[in-house]
Length: 181
Image (cartoon, rainbow, N blue to C red; front, side, top):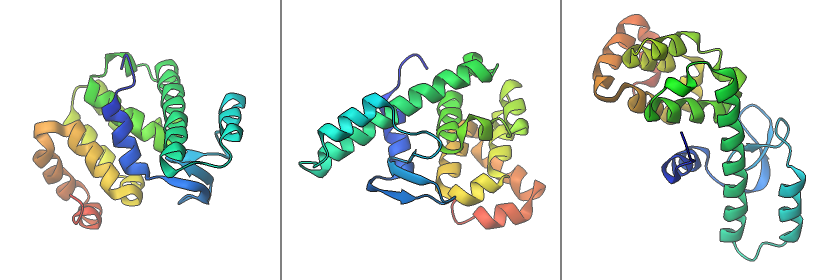
């Protein structure tokens, strides 16, 4: 991705949701805004300055703007890390990059790199199998709708084929997700 698209920003915002106050995420990490993990990714000096200059938000929109700034910074940092650590990144198409960036934002680049079967399938231009690998994971059971949205984008017109493969390959995973598929 040459530039951070508004479509990607809106996609991540939809999946993360917005919180004006710090909260514990599903794995117990202190988080704020659109899923900014403050424990693993503390605020930078520049981000803190913006925060302290707006310690009393005039309205929720001002808080959302600050959170979107954090999101953009995090996505740019994550994209840079993917470019450095994932050899297939530059060859991926826009849909593949969107899915990989969304997943890396959600679970970290190190977490994404554990999806060896999915990454191998993407590298071999087998996006139906890549989507199967994505759905056949603990990640998919944890984030359900987000994983399904990513699988749909990844598989494209092969999504029905993906569901057929998953139902045969791992019927229990398919059944755990069937309300979201």
